[in-house]
Amino acid sequence: MMKGRLIALVAILFVSTAIYAYQVFTTHRVGSDDLMQIGTTVNFLEGRGFNQLYAEPTSFETARVRIDMWPYVYRISAIPFLVLTDKDVELSILWLKIFSFLFLLGSIAYFFYSYSIAHLSATIAYVFLFAAITYSPIKYMSGVDLMACGTSILAISFLANYFSGERK
Image (cartoon, rainbow, N blue to C red; front, side, top):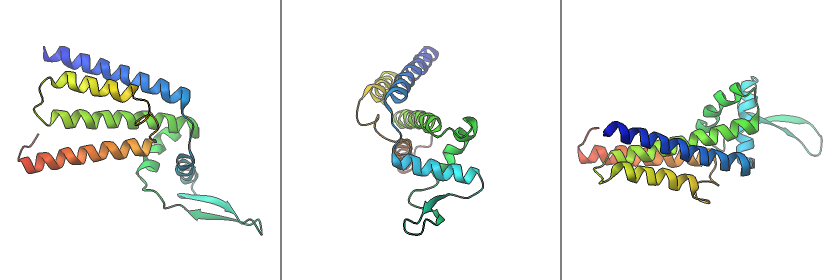
């Protein structure tokens, strides 16, 4: 019986990811924050560090400026996608966003598995489907926002498990 529930959850995870991927691939436009972070990652892959090329408007001289406005986790996690897509920035951002969504769903599942909840499988399935079809809160988050939410949920789960004395 447990194996059947697990298969059903994996199927629902696949369906919710497919719905989310369809929404992302058909409606997502890359924002300036994503472009800055991925642009500095491309520069890193080309051996120039996590910086961006700027042109001085008065003298037209160019200078490389290090960009430290965001943590490096998003940039480092984008490296495999940029390598696999041959530095296709838009495709890498879209794939990173989908994998960030999967990380968020995994964090939510871990959170629910950490507690004794009645109808656990059904609850997780409903959350997965809600996350896929909800229009605004999750769809418009960038990949780094999805990663941050997933990490926050994991941190809350680990903290609650630590203080409750349960070790799972």
